[in-house]
Length: 268
Image 1 (cartoon, one colour):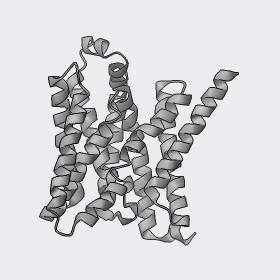
Image 2 (cartoon, rainbow, N blue to C red):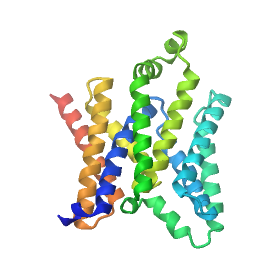
Image 3 (cartoon, rainbow, N blue to C red):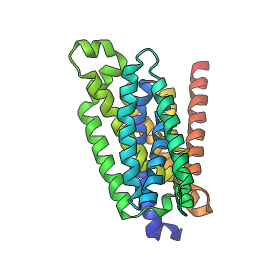
């Protein structure tokens, strides 16, 4: 168990715990908005930013974060332009993100291996700057959610009533997409761009299977996420497994257990 004494593992555990809070917290609202796939979209755009960061020798996560924020504005602009086909915004931005990332890969000068680590996650390489960035994003996300919780609850369950009551619907939509972009941009180094959307959606799916209320679903989503993150990282550290995939596989196991529990409850 000497792994717990290693600074790199301690940083990984702290980073994982923080993302384990913010990802499902935002995921609950994304699922209610029927935007579960936005995680994959923003992750691919973030990878393009990371690639550019390596290319121009700037802090890759910061450049990826800027790309993710710009993509969040683009998604909301396209959602407004195609009100009847709002899901087109996700498809368009994802296609552009993949194309741009591929283009930048072809211009790579020895950094392609480093960018690949962001695709699959490299939580053990978190440094102090990465950890501080994750901490700042976590505090920001939790604070904004707490302040706007009641308004978002009303907006997602009855958007027309929320608009009539005077809530700034467009502002809240942009704010949620921006916060999601921040979470994804700092999470890709932890679980990887290919798996980051799982932290947004799978804990929420599991919580919806057993939750008794909206607040309960938020609490259960974070609980499931933290359980999988901590257990997955510990298992990966002890048995030399891939940390990102270990976390996601545990999340899927939790989801299966909750679905079986719900099926059993209904059968009684």
